[in-house]
Image 1 (cartoon, rainbow, N blue to C red):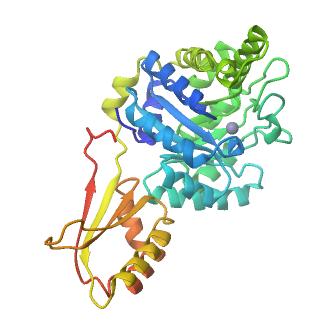
Image 2 (image 1 turned 120 degrees about the vertical axis):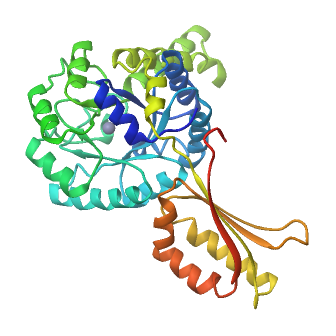
Image 3 (image 1 turned 60 degrees about the vertical axis):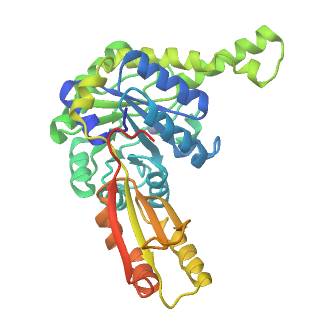
Length: 396
Ligand SMILES: [Zn+2]
C-alpha cells in the first residue's frame, strides 16, 4: 500500500473527527512496532522522526528503513520530520523521503517565527509537501525528551494563530493549550475553550504535542475540537524501557538481544491502545479511497556530448550530482553510461523527484539553471528528456 499525501490524510481525519497517530521512532524496533500496531488496527499512520532525536540515530540510515516500511505496509502512511529546526534540515528531510515537514520556531518571537516558518513552507509547498507550524510553546517537564524543550508554557491565542497561518501558509498548526513534552506532573489541565476558539478561527487540522498522560476523556475533547494529529513518544519510550528493565532483572545480565527481547511487542501494545483511543481504527480503506498516493517522479535525460572527452563527461556528472542533489525535492541523482554500444544515446541522468510539483520547481531552481546553462546544455545538444511518474502499483 502506498505512501499517501499527508494533507489529504489529515483533511480526511479533520472531516471525520478522528486523530492520526504520529509516533516518533528512534530505532528499527520502534518502526516495526508502530507499523504492526497500525496494521493490527487497520489505521492510517504517521511515522515521525524528531530532529531533537538525531543524536540517537543516523537520520539518513533510519530514513531508508522508514521509507521501505511505509512502502510495504498494508495501511496508508506518511513520513514526517518532527521539530525541524531550520530550512536546511527541512530540505534534508524532504530529500530523504519525508512527505510532511514540521518547522519549529516556536521559541522565537512571533515575527521571527513567521519569517522562518514561511521560508520552510515556501520550499516544501514547491515540492507538494504540507507543513506543520507551531505557535505558542509546549515545554518539557520530565521524562525522556523533556530537557530538550526548556522554558515555560506559552499558550496559543486565536488572534495570533490566525495571523501566523495567514502569513506563513502552514497547512496544520501545533497548538499549546496545556500539554507538555515528556511526562506531566500531576493532573494535566487543558484549555479546551481556547482550543475551540482556535479551531473556529482557523478551520484547519490542529496538532497536539505532548500527548502522553492525558485521560481518555481529554483525548476525546481534543478531537472534537479539531485535533487530527497527536504526537506521541514518551509513553512508547517508557514501555520499551520497562521491558528492558524487566529483561535485565529476569536474566540478571545477558547480552543486547536478550535485553531488547519483546521491546517491539511492548511498544506495539501501547501504540495500538492509542490508535484505538483516537478513533483512527478501521479508517485505512476509507482514507485510501480519498487520498492521493504519494508517488515519486523519475526525471530521465538521455544524451550524447560533443566537445567533451570522457574525463570531461565524468567531471560534468560529478558536478551535477553535487549541485542537483541539494535542490529541494531531489531524492537521488543517478548518472550513467550505456552498457552496450549501438544505442542512440550514450549517457543518462536519472533524477528522482519526491513528487510531480518538483518538475516545475526544479526547472526554475537557480542551482539547476546555472548548472544546465553552463555545464550541461552547451555540450549536450543531442538529448531527449522525459518525466516518468511511478505507477501506483509499484511499491519499490
Ligand atoms: Zn513535539
